[in-house]
Figure 1 (tube, helix red, strand yellow):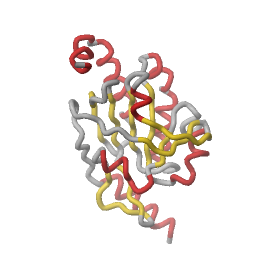
Figure 2 (cartoon, helix red, strand yellow):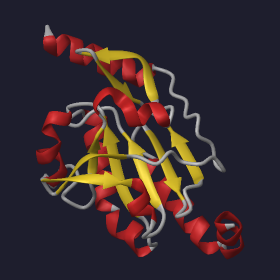
Figure 3 (cartoon, one colour):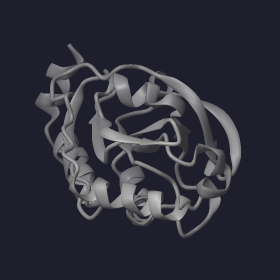
Length: 191
């Protein structure tokens, strides 16, 4: 029964509407949360990460689900390309948070290349308006699949929402490269 419910929820995820409310130019809500990097727990702080450069925040519904496994592996494989552009990555999920320590270090997922934040109660997803409506597994909400690129001053410079995991990495990396290549844009955003 549990397996049937999980399968049904994932099928609904594939067709459920997903809309990101934060548009380019909006101020990204600052947050801290329990996180794991290569299996080690720590408290992630968006403001501390932004002090080092742009941050790509990608929300995904649940660790250890097919689409989320593909997405986190794709971000892991591209982590060096983001680093070369001066950007850092962070994954945020409300699903299977009790398993994030292992998920964060396994090479078929994050591979220890970026932190994953446990968004218990979809607290962070609510502030980014990426809660997946109509889905509530075991009393817990889930986020939709949305990626944000945040400039160091906290301004959203790119938003991409799609339940298919395929294009999140390329969309985010292209946004970082475009931002990096436009110094006039970076100066205006810093003002």
